[in-house]
Picture 1 (cartoon, rainbow, N blue to C red):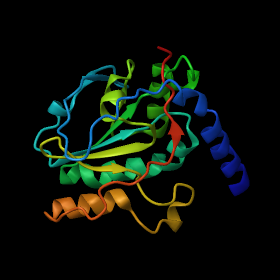
Picture 2 (cartoon, rainbow, N blue to C red):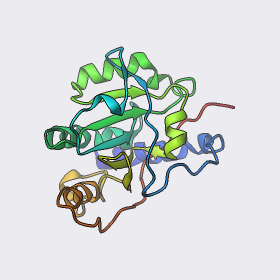
Picture 3 (cartoon, one colour):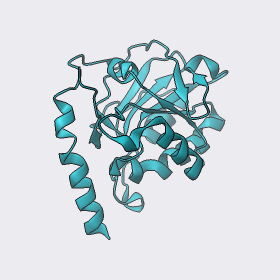
Picture 4 (cartoon, helix red, strand yellow):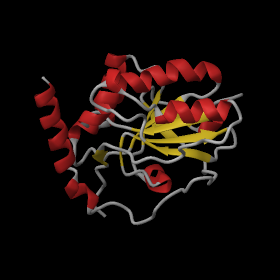
Length: 204
């Protein structure tokens, strides 16, 4: 089973190489930058923005998708992050930046079906024009950006150090950053390398 999973992951890494040629050259937001709020359509048919979340302490913005094996591997963990931290004032905002023209499995209809099947507890938004992913400088799925209460970026990168085997995770980068932030401490590791499939960018 693990061999099959590794092969699937390898294919997920190879095919997106074509998409990299279309990737924006803009590096996007950097550590400490305050982001500009956005408005994107969710799987509930409504438009969502960060401004709708009241009395929050921060936001976990995750660029993820339907089909990438890495996103699939982290799906349960992303759900658990929301269930654990939303009640502490730090909800997950999941955004699908992929072009459905290159990968039909990333269509809005497919997003709606997946969210219903998995019973996502968080908002799942479609970045149809890919403007939000470009602004953030997102490159992969999943790619995490932790924001503080003022919408300033305080962590960028991976969720943890083992996408394949959750039980073998040794360092929970994102959760460590959240814990240190909530305790008012400096974040020891504020940036890591996001591991995942390349975003499927639209042809310009």
